[in-house]
Amino acid sequence: MASNAGVAAFPAYVASGTTPRTAVNLMVRAAFYLFVLSIPFEMPNRIFPVEIPTITGSIFLLATMFAPSASYRRIPAAALWFVGYLWMFGFSTLVNRSTHGDLVLQLALLMIQLVLILWAASNLLRHPVVLRGVLITLAFAVSVRAALQVLGIGATAHQVWTGGDRITAFGQNANLSAIIMSVGALILLSLRPKIITWPIAAVTGLAIIQTGSRGGLICLTVGLLVWAIGSGHTLKARLRGAVAGVFVLAVLAFGVLSSDMLRTRLLAAAEAGSLAGREHIYPAALSMISERPILGWGPIENQFEIGVRIEEEQKDRRDAHNLVLDLMSSTGILGTIPFLIGYLLCWRSAWRARRGRSGILPLAMMAVTFMGCMSGTWIASKILWLILSIALATGATAPHAARGRSNLGEATP
Image 1 (tube, rainbow, N blue to C red):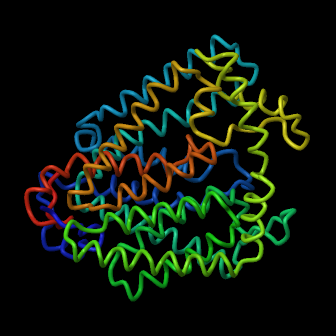
Image 2 (image 1 turned 180 degrees about the horizontal axis):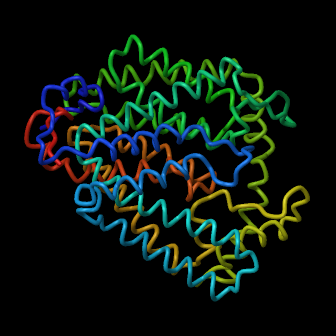
């Protein structure tokens, strides 16, 4: 049975290489890495209307035309279910006669792009060199992003009513930033040499604490638990993983207790039930679902309806702050079912991957994004679809990997 080598086995990859038949076009790989590199660097206060990761994602899709057989050879079953969701997205929009067509079109184009990225990425990531490059690129990007925030370069602060400032960078959403950095922290903990990667992971953890994101903290904690519990198939490996997990969680807990801002936010949630408005949004969304359960209120339209029902004063609309509630309130049962089937297929693939050369890491990263989507609506976030792609790719190669000793470098696409 394969052991959990995970990303730590990457140094052995160099010796294995790829044959010319299986090598991925250099231009495609470079465009893919550029897309991944841009994910932690969204800039809401930009002067142009399109996000940087959306631009780099488009560049990546254009580059895949230079290697269509490698990028689109297989169509994952999950991708077909996500296409089914897109059909219901459009059908719900037509039935509900959306009055915010420009916003709906923008979201629709973004979702189409993300499904295409999933299709291409899930094929390319079957190649060990591409998987290795993507994970290291994401770890590097997150490290730079976290360091900039901790050093105060480009940092932005938002004062919270419980006291203190929530710090992020470039005006980014603090919750999404925490999710992305949590994924990066898990990769860093799995990389070697640990004498370098673990201190960088600690800096990343500090940046997550600075965001004051309670959901982000839960994401990181759950991801660490999965990573620690699932580390290895032998008793020795599991004990080593458990010890490492306890140590990391203890350091994280110390950091949380040292942050007055985050500690008071956690106490406010526990004692006063303050969930940043979710305590009002969730009942409103459930009421909307009961009224229109089949096709919902339409994408985007559901957000404006939530804003009306909770009597939002500062914004015209509010999202459901939960993936399932957003799916149900926007596209109803007909849109929710195909999306969740596709999502569950990704989970199944991540579960299979744990016995392969990629180890527990894909499952741990899936856990991070799942928890993030339970407290926020990140259906259109690049990090979610990248992790889904990694899960599909590593799960697909796991049966071959399980036949021999674990080493990501020996996986065959």
